Image (cartoon, rainbow, N blue to C red; front, side, top):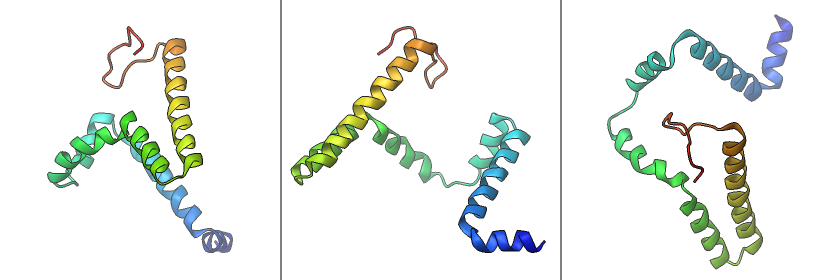
Length: 115
């Protein structure tokens, strides 16, 4: 018991993160994907559906390019180059993975043609 208290006092944030992770694993193995979705869907207001309908598109490549253009305008060329290279590398990695592993899209449809 004394060792557990010492561990908690030394690494409070680490212990908290590990506890949350273990609870998430427990939840994941206790409920199916559909049941888990239905349980968590009751805890958010309706306006979040509208909000995330539009915020979801912020993950598109146009935001990365916009960020690079803004960084160039602010004369931060190294950071802009880092954003552009990260965008290119992630795109290449995904395209290679699609070709090697014949991965499905997020909608569950098989990828017949790599975009």
